[in-house]
Image (cartoon, rainbow, N blue to C red; front, side, top):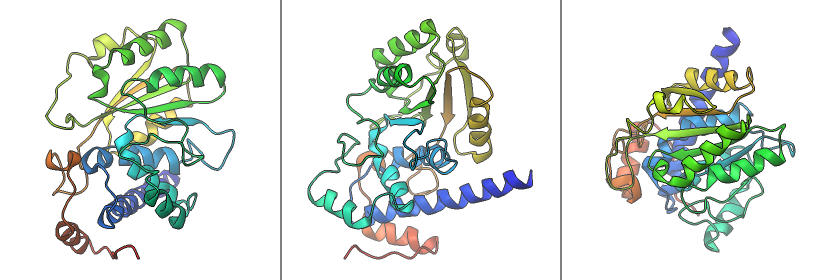
Length: 269
């Protein structure tokens, strides 16, 4: 338990660091979607820093970030891990190679571009069949599950009993413009009819994320994990605030948040 406590403490500190590294990028002028990025921050940090997807290994497990608007978190992680230099990152920005979503192959650590909504699980099927010894992850938003292609892909995985795909749904209950409810669609009575192990838990609980990941390695079955999250999590000014689905905060607000949390910040030179 001491070892786990040490891991949880490390992850908690890393999540806080990446959260403010991400906000610093926005303060420097980079345009990212705050709400949906912060809601999936915890799961992405756990995946990368527990080395479930070990970016330094060629034979690593694969991840498709179907929530492409959360690419700012991915870049903050790559910068923190020193897998991309800030100089190169700045050049990509200037050349307009980093867009509003993860839609271009500019970094070798991006396994697939976001593309149109609903396509990632289908791409995961191809990855899974080609790499039966790897685990294939995708992180999708709860608004995305309206796409028929999502269900077609899940039915295919279930029917063919493909056992190495792990679908993580960021259930923040907010689309880009409105509050959403999907009680019937995500009802376990429906999902339990599929050939998946189904999980549902607090997506901001490091402990629960950790044990979900640990359980993946105990069995040989694909999973659907429904993570109950808060859009804009960790910053009260942004939490469940539709304004920051797309909108960018004023520098004065960011400076207030940095100062309140004793975070050093400076503009890009």
